[in-house]
Amino acid sequence: MNPIMRDRILIFLLGSIFFLPFLGNVHLFDWDEINFAEAAREMIVTGKYYMVQINYLPFWQKPPLFIWMQALSMNLFGIGEYGARFPNAVCGIISLLTFYEIGRREHDRKFGFYWALAYLASLLPHLYFKSGIMDPWFNYFIFLSVYFFYRYAKDSTSSWKLLFLSASFSGLGIMTKGPVALLMLGLTVLCITLVQKKWLFRSMRDLLIFCSG
Image (cartoon, rainbow, N blue to C red):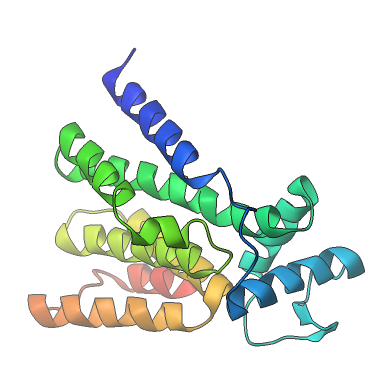
């Protein structure tokens, strides 16, 4: 078997073993966990997937993307703790694989593998990826948004497609937790601009592509 594919399978299995079991064994305890799960349940009950509700009244504080994930999960696994937390367990597995792929690209295969294992061995992921809050997916989208912009900024020959990916993941972050995603990416762009002391966008087309996200 290809060593890279073997690494991917091993990381996937480790993530599944650590993140998927026992998600429903502990009741929802955080204010956010309870409210997001209830919003997903009300989506299913009312069929109003276009609107986030709490107590069957419009709830405008949060965008719908994570609630849609929970509603889909609850449709698969039933309404309860496991269904509410399953999306974040998936995020944990995807995050491990993403760290491996980025580490392998930026350094080498061994670095990517150890990065994924080091993250898996940390405490916080085992709290976040077994919860029903939206922060894991939000952090994942922002991480990729910043990463793809960093790749665009560091290489003068890089493709506009990296900007499109950066803007797209920032947009997913906005759909997950709101405009704070745009603020975080904007601060990253500002910091890189100040460090490099130059305008980062190489053409008006690149700037428009970035803003379109």
